Length: 371
Length: 258
Image (cartoon, rainbow over the protein chains, first blue to last red):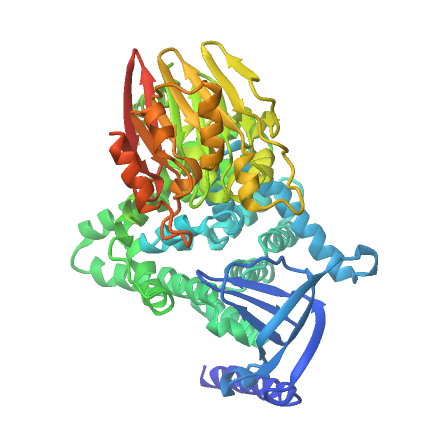
């Protein structure tokens, strides 16, 4: 086991040294003009960070850009020691202009991303047309991890009530997509092909959900479990989680400082390590109590909260003590909302009633606890 | 799990919830808290009209979501009093989310739109629904559409962003009379709500649609004083949130969000 850890750390160090070499080609404070497509957008409460290649720009306001917008940026190169290790360069006092997009001249990747983006917008449009503002934003957040329609006020309420994690496409969603596709495929194919189709479906869903770290983590983990089943090996949950985290940081070292990634990993550790540990520990003396805690979902909520609350405190400056209660009132309904939300894509006239009922309840709970 | 018992509870809750959202036949005029801008929703049964959309889609949709039954995605009439962003900014977004039957951006003086007993009388038609280049902001304000809503013994005067000049011109036409509710002109600007105008209307309720900590200093202290002088009840959306005026069976009630 020690050798494995050593190997993982060694590869990470190698990646960091590459980042340092790449970013050292630019002098501090040199002024550059850059043209390219926006690769990533990070929208926090009061800032918008866009990434074009290895360059990062921080705008102290709401994002007015979309992913894959073609932009021209003029700014001064900056980058602290850690940033340089990560291979990223910040552009200070940047001026940005969005250039018109010519679809024909775009690369194949660009066209695929744009197509996925349009499909995503079409999916979200169904919620917009059938549900009121707050509810449609929440449903789009839970089903697809789409946060653009969650207004600032409601977003703040979600943070205050400790429920912000539900507006992220993650393990729940992947389990639902993978499980449904797998069950259907078993009717037609054997395990091997059914698993492959399920993994492809999960990957497609993850891309549709914007390829955010939590959903990618879930896909990799679920893929590993399916793969283990195909080759007949035992899947060890916590080890899969470690390797998945390592793999993601290897591909994108900046995930280390990404809130979604940290929350997702934290919640997974809570579910896969903390919950079973507490369960084992309590079962020895309080069997009845464990039954109650499990039945009400209190143990699950507590375990995930234990791991995510410090991260939320670190990034948002507050630790929500009422989160336990708000989560108990909301979390059991998340799978129902995901199912009815998915149903709205097929029969919106039928499914919008239950979807609204559940979403409205959640909005009221979040509003009450987030006041 | 006793599915039968749970089923009965869910059905009863759903029925109660439907009954709660079902239109009650009273006239409701909701001054939405859309920040620094104007937007008022008028509801009578299944009929809905919107006077201006305000600048923010988010705030407008939140207000519509709170006030309209969740199954109703149709707005029969939208008036745009003038083309500035604080009155028209969310129109495009509104049309993409709701079925809007008719948008009125330009009307003639004395036009009237009726829905049963409810009528929208245009006192001042506005010059154009489009932004005219070279036209000053104060000219645009003076040209804004002024609407008199009448329903039985109840009336609301929607004054958009008009200034003293248009107020006096309206007084000269002799159409103004005692009014139940006044949407205070131009977010409580000191250049609007002249004393003779307020004295003529003597509104029971005055609503100022204004954003919290706005950079214009709205509502102005002098304006507030003039409103107090005519003995009206003042409500501000920056402090009270959505302000709902409900009229039914000859009585008027005011509810606020906060």
